[in-house]
Amino acid sequence: MENENIRKELVVSAIENGSVIDHIPAKSVFRVVKMLNLEDTDTQVTVGFNLESRKYGKKGIIKVSNKYFEDEEVNKIALVAPTATLIVIKDYKVTEKRNVKIPDEIRKIVKCVNPNCITNHQQVATRFTVIDKEDLKLQCHYCEKITGKNNIDIL
Amino acid sequence: MKNRSLVSITDYTKEEYIKILNLAEEFEKNPTQRILEDFVVATLFFEPSTRTRLSFESAASRLGAKVIGFSDATNSSVSKGESLKDTILTVSNYSDIIVMRHPREGSARFASEVSTVPIINAGDGGNQHPTQCLLDLYSIRKTQGKLDGLNVAFVGDLKYGRTVHSNVMALCNFNTTFHLVSPLELKLPSYVKMHIKGNNLNYHQYTDLSEVMPVADIIYMTRIQKERFSDPIEYEKVKNAYILTASMLSGCKENMRVLHPLPRVNEITEDVDVTKQAYYFQQALNGVYVRQALLASILGVK
Image (cartoon, rainbow over all chains, first blue to last red; front, side):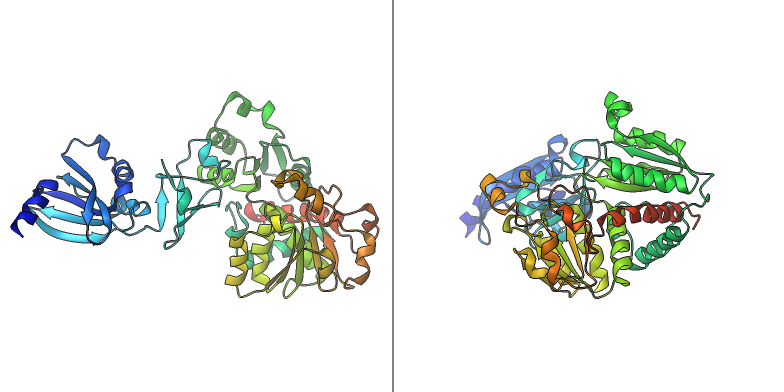
């Protein structure tokens, strides 16, 4: 048992203060990094993927020091990582744990699937209403076409 | 409705449709009223559509409004690369209402968000054309004496035809039974059918036009375009199956009328024009009254 704990500690080091996004599908880790703009951050970020998970097989994890996410900021990752959990760490302790939820409206981050949509031709920020959260379907606020889960392209 | 843009047919409620139709009826009785003399109507046609533009300009002129605008983007600032936003903001300064047609889908919604004056969408690509839909409702009500509980058949390209989609959406408010006649490749999209089901209404699908003849109160014809088919052989197979001829009308209901958004190509033969079922030219005229009603009500005069 002790060995087991040590191994885990080596794989993902603990953080003092900040946020951990756990249970990300392994293949979506880099999309999540991009969606949260972590490439541009100065704070310490640890990204792990293809980690063993009892529940999900292979998972990804992102640890961000000294950063706390707003609901609106983090919920958008539910588009690519519906199973993700947000863990808030303060002074090495877990103070909060919650699942990400697909928001009712999505702005800016998804590209409209319709090549003739105005958002793909002029400087118009995309905006979608989520019309189906289970079988992810986004309806464009502008052209009214539906972008399905297989067509979701993150801007 | 004062100062509210009309972008999509679902922007209006059933009560608002009826208000517009009643107002259009008034204008049909008395089409020339100089009630918009103090107003400037801009018609911005980023792609040409002579019929729709003339219908709007006729409506505005009969009400005494001044009309400014362009009929083709090639001779406007758009050809110099001006953004839609800038064009709309500029024209908002010169006019009290903007009627626009644009080839991109969603352009009218975007324009309504940046404009300081209301926008009437006169067609945004394959998306919405709400004034066509309202004039169709007007024509249906006028020919049938009511909108509730009718059997309406849509024929032809039900997959890509935007008028069909908006008409189905709007008619879902009126307890309609839908009869959908199309080749298999051009069936009504499932999200529109879900809308019908969501309103606890029924639809029936057919591939043979003659089957709806005994039941339909309205037959709404649309054009089947060759370029919609992935397989040209499929097109050749079906292209003549959805043509309405005068002899096919023999078994139809007494009150049945044929509508078509026009322009027609060959989907209604000319021998239908002289039958009493033909209503498509009157339908186009009704467009002027409906557009008068929209201009007057959005500008807050009626």
